[in-house]
Length: 343
Ligand code: AHM
Image (cartoon, rainbow, N blue to C red; front, side, top):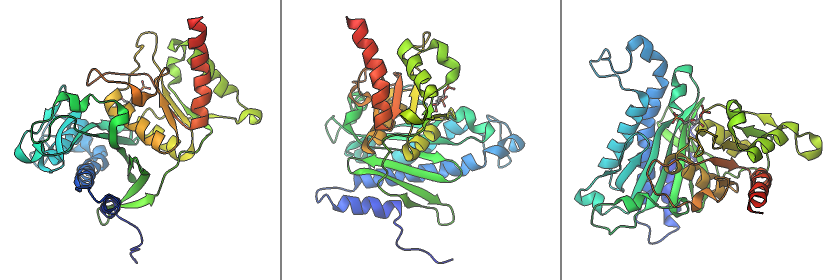
């Protein structure tokens, strides 16, 4: 098979991007490479997931005598391990861990960046072969370089992200990441073990035909959310419809699809859980940043997700993200309701 050398690998692309900034140190490119590497390892295990039942249950010992770990723990360990050994990250925060991990060695203390991630989002779907993914978010430290990173480095609003991305383990494995220069997608070529540029300069279509929400919670949503969902269902050709409901229950897959094809994804608060389910730092901020850099928008229903100043590592937030026109229509319902309440 002829190899097309016109296609950039992830490493080639990040180095090219770096050259546009004469003062760049290459740390960000190194960090993205490390995340990509950890995700290649996760990809291998995700692809074997169907065999776990015949090789042994989670928590037991496999035929090589190794402990079989839950995949989300495995993914977490890979990311922590690779980033700890790399030279570009001063510490991490993970959805899987109660607290941040500061690497605190001479090299890491000099690193400019910290990284937050959800190692395997949607992991409850693994045993039914649904696409899942890793989400990551990168911040420049606010603490003094040369000293260990601090919690303040992690509790920054999303608008301070330097880069964010995800890897979707689907029919193909794809790494998508965003910086202020735009959003690009790379598909893993399993034969050569490289991510190859497949989706250059991704733009989220301003409108789409899909809305994604857990309808099972419908009667527990606030009235304006119910009204917007009902409006989605009533759409016809005269007002941009008909819309289709698509909800995988694996946010990486749902938002990836909407990013490429246009659409809106919602995880609103409910009567019993007003803060919703999704985590601001590990899930919402990275996707809000990616979709915004692709021309879309994200809100918690009151303010832009990226403007929320976090107070806790694991805080949750209602989350609405997607195509700009659809988001503006949603906001017309949400904001009209808050104006009524204020009168
Ligand atoms: P997880 O961290 O247990 O995997 O949950 C996160 C997932 C998201 O990927 C998805 O959007 C959401 O949970 C689905 O939740 P629900 O089943 O309540 O609709």
